[in-house]
Length: 282
Image (tube, rainbow, N blue to C red; front, top):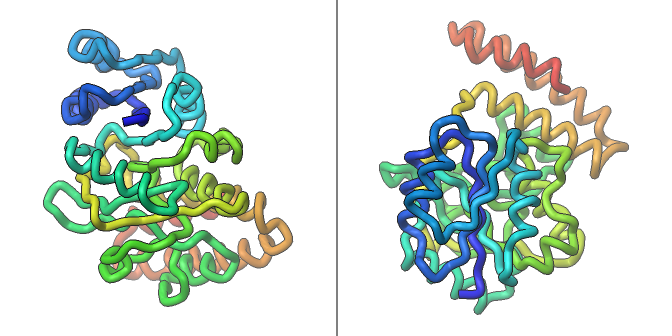
């Protein structure tokens, strides 16, 4: 396969080991280690000498780390793969064949948790309107994060797909400028997919390929993930919808206040505090 697989590793030695173990021997595999202190580098050097290993002295984050690793790839098709996303060789070949035979410039596949439960992994691009619905907990209009199983039951063009498994043409990635390094983590793949479509290319999703994503590579709590995503959302709207951001900001604040009240009344003080902290982000 004319495919390069790029994985970022950050203190996920055992998980990265399992991910690498399932990859085909004939694929170019590039791992960038983001200053791990858990022995990840030593493990990779010892067990996987074929892997092209890049050792960073600092944690570069998702966007910059993938951009650095990308420069070492020698193939026209790239798969960005999370270290906690386990792809069987047969599934990888199936995804590759689907990508080659369909009108796709970016491809995402069906992700499931370890117990087989569906993990939503694609959606519509954020707009001022659906962002308001999102923060208010409504999802009936082009949701940024669809939760309905029916959304993931058929192949379709989507606004964005998860960076846990994101296949892309190298020429497209380079043409749109790669990942935006102003985004350290979260919303990076959404921003990339936005620019891919602005350039006239397509983003596809197929349920015909399924892979397990543990979602454990990051040790961030759900509350912290929400805050970081909100920070990324702010950057996204200031970048693409700057004229609308004051209005979007108003509704984001309103939505957060409503969540703070609701979760305080429910006695879920940890969630309520997270939303209080999120007010400082926007």
